[in-house]
Amino acid sequence: MATYGISDLLVESDFIWREIAVGDHVMVEADLYDSDGLMLKYGTSYLVLAKLRKEPGSSTLIVESDVTGELVNVHPALICSYENAHIPISYS
Image 1: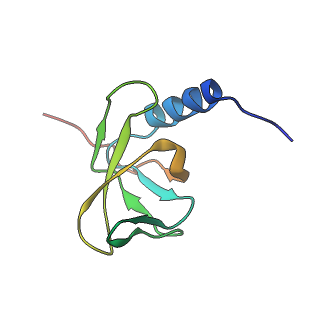
Image 2 (image 1 turned 90 degrees about the horizontal axis):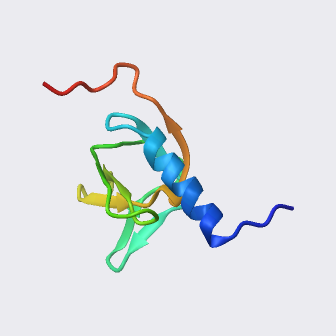
């Protein structure tokens, strides 16, 4: 069984963040809750609406909750699967 240190997890999270683009779909590895209850569900595909690059290890993806309709920050370490957009988003 492989063991990972903090630096390995930061590198992996940063890699995933770079690979996922706005317009891609992601799935979280478990139900995600906040203090008010369920926000995101395991097994549901969420559209990436934006990406925030703060500093290595704390960058997030922004998706919309299908439960509350709120925007949710998702750390790349919580992503279990992603699918690239069929038609990439282009900016004018």
